[in-house]
Length: 138
Image (tube, rainbow, N blue to C red; front, side, top):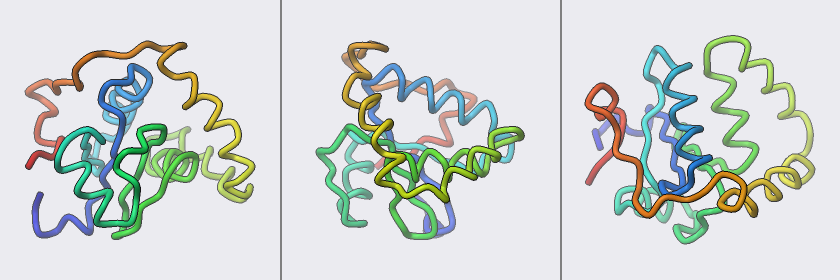
């Protein structure tokens, strides 16, 4: 990670979850400015970043966004990510006005069932050469 990491936006995700891997690909495709970087929650760098920002590195049931040295989780992370993507996705950020406790009810149902509904891989996603620079490593 570079010294200017605090200005970067890092998406931390469950690298073995097919839904999560699909979400990362979705973000990359709609983020032409390459403002987001990525790390698996199972990686050493991902675990370290979560711990350093007061999160639980063993909680794989959430997507996390590290932005401006603050860690966002669940629907707050997803909506803040959507806010920075190419249109029409920023429109979803209107849901940030709804209390997180209500938004996260739906999020938790999906997270709890993600392996059953979308499947799971035994290994974390290996990025292609074209996007490898956006994935953080030790």
